[in-house]
Image (cartoon, rainbow, N blue to C red):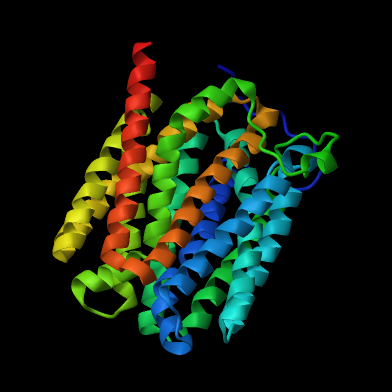
Length: 403
C-alpha cells in the first residue's frame, strides 16, 4: 500500500493561504459545487408549472448534467496532475459561475439544458482536482478521504434545502437561488487564487486529455470488488435527485418543493452523518455497513411506496442514507490509498466516471418508465436493482475476506 503523504508544493513568491485554511476552503468548494448541482431539484415543480415539464424532461435536465460531467472527467479529469491544481480549479469555477447566470436568466428548457451542460463540465473538471488537493493538503492520513466523502453529501443536502427555502419564501426563486450560488463561486475563485499549489507540473498535459480511464494496476482489483456498492450508492442518489420529489408528493399528496428537498436532505444528511461517525472505522467494515444499510433502507422505502406511507418512505430514506454515505466513503478509503500521489486525480476521475454513469443512466431510464408503467412500478424496479447490487457487493467482500 502506498503512502498518502503530500508532495512538496512548488515554490511560490505570492501570498498563500496556510495549508489548514486551504484544506477547509477546498472542502467548502466541493460542498458548494454539489449544492449547486442539487439546486434545480426542488425547482422542478416550478418549472413544470411554468413550462409544462414532464417526468422525462425532469430526468433529462438531471441526466444531461451527469453526461457533461462524465465527458469532463474523461478528458480533463487528470489535467491537474500535469498543469497544477489551481489553474484547473480557477478555470472551472469561472465556468461554474457563468452557468449560474444562465440558470438565473433561463426562460425555457433550452437555456436550462445548456446551463446544465456547462455546469456539468465545470464540475467534472473541478471535482477530481479538488479531491486530489484534499489528499495533498491533509496532515492526518485518512482525513482527506473522509472529507472527500462528507463534503459532497453535505453540499447536496444544503443545496436542496436552501434552494427549496428560497423558492418558498423569496421572489423570483428560479433566479435568486442561482445568483446566490454565483456569488459564492466568485468568492471561492479568490480563495483558490490565494491557496498554495500542491501539484508539481509535469509533461504530458495534452496526452492526458485523450479520453481514458486512468486506474493504476495496484487499485484495479479493489475497484472492481467495490464497484457494485459504488454503483448502488450513486444510482440511488440519481433517483432521489430526479424523481424523489415526485415520489414524496405522491405519498403525501401535497405540492410544495420543500417535500422533495426534505427527501434529498434526509438521504444525503444521514449519509454525511454516517461518514463522520464511521471516520475511524476500518474501510472494509464501512463497506459492510454501507451495503447492509442500502438493502434495508431501500426495502423499507419500497414498503412506503406500496402503502403511500410518508413515514415509511422517510424512515427508509434515512436508513438508505447511511448506506449512501458509508458506501461511498468505504469505496474512497479502500481504493484511493492504493494510488501514488501523481496518480490520484486520474484514479479519482475514474471513480467518478463510474459513479456518474450510475447516477445518470438508470435515472434517465426511470424517467422514461414513469410514463409507461407509473411512478410506483418504476420505484419497485429501481429499488430492486439497488438491492441486488448492494447485496452483490456485500457477498463479494465476504467471499474475498475468506479467500
